[in-house]
Image (cartoon, rainbow, N blue to C red; front, side, top):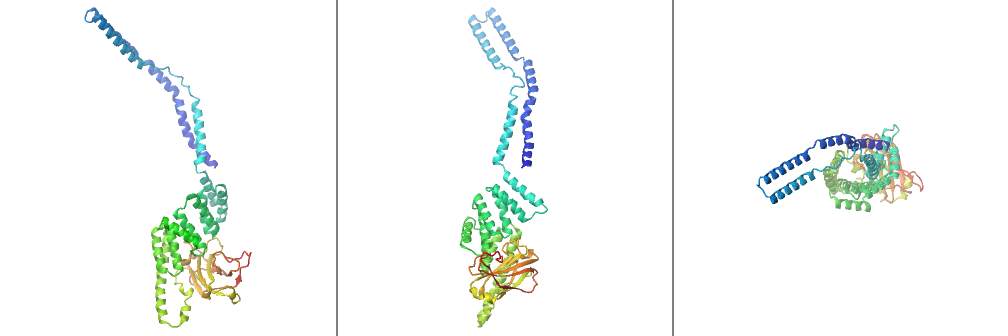
Length: 440
């Protein structure tokens, strides 16, 4: 802030110099004006003309060319004309060059005070403080996302009405997987900036992913509101495509993603959607082949073998194959319709989930391949890390957030290479009430 006020002071110097400039020129200007007025002979010339014309009238009267009455009329006209000419030439006495000198410093002080007061009320001092906090962290050798969040939270406490603070905090929370804080920051931003379609779309998207890619009632309400304001909002269309894809509605997913690609200005996001379209087209063709084979097969075991793993399309990109099973000791604790979430996270736990697949207990055991097609966000993918931590959670409630009573299995530091053998993850632990170990 000190630098800001110094910069304002430097900018004020030219303005103050211009204010003082007339005072510096006053003496020379008064001298020149006085010299001009002293040299002015207009009044003398008018008087000389008057006397010549009066003499001419008197001569004409003596010669008998005009009567006395006519002489009096013409002389009166001459005097009236002289009076009019000399009246316009009357000059006020010049004031001293230093007259009003006190008003100049008073004006300079007023300009300075008004400038600083106005900027303190209308200027972007809060944004400057925010920028300074961000620069301090970026230039700090020990700077980290956690440090950036701490500094921005301090700014949020100092200036909670500044939307730029919440706009800066939201992506940091989101990228570190702090969905609750990210949602709160985005809601505060919406409260300050208004219910803009782009902000509503981001809120719907993060709540959708926080609910493990589920269109909850709250998410659906945001979707409806956003599409009502902007039917072509790409973030919403992309999210609806993900939901359709997860539920096997591949034609619908392709349609949503094609429309979303047309609205994205981010080439990386658009390319991610194009890859999703290709996968959806491949799965659509595979679904048709499976239907044809099912119509010819009479053995129901063939249908049962088409579990989550067989639905994964082969991909040349990096990924992890996961073989999921449930410990027999825990089989009676959950029903066949309970949700099974297979999640890949970065080893440090600083990012949102890199990939997630949802199944049910009746699918167990199964083998699934996690890759970039299962990413929750274009900003967090498996291909961006060398190793990932696998977490498998069984939730009877189907809730996105881990809860006491969930069943969990984990595997640490699995290479992401696309050629690895299936990694076995056994669901063998129960999340106890009050435990900090929720698996995610």
